[in-house]
Image (cartoon, rainbow, N blue to C red; front, side, top):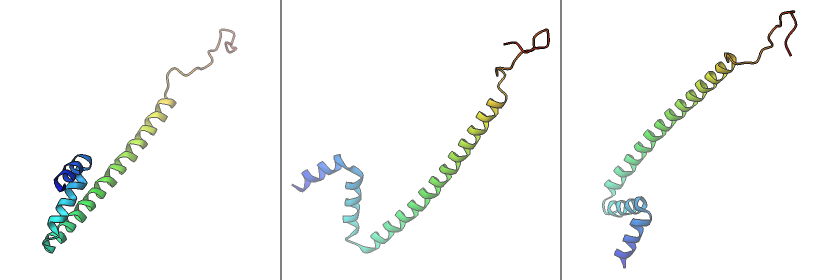
Length: 92
């Protein structure tokens, strides 16, 4: 029965199943559990730093996109401007 549940869980939620197995093995020796928690804390810290870096990069890309879009609108060569006719009046 235990094997069947293990197989089902490993297919439904493989990462959770792996973490549960790791924790059950770590319960036998308390030192491993503390090392595991310290490793997880370090990994979470690194992932948060990477996420913040990605967010900063994303903001910079958005700012550059807005700047380019604004510049293209200002420098658009095909903007409709009234053309002066020969008699000095604007053409309609």
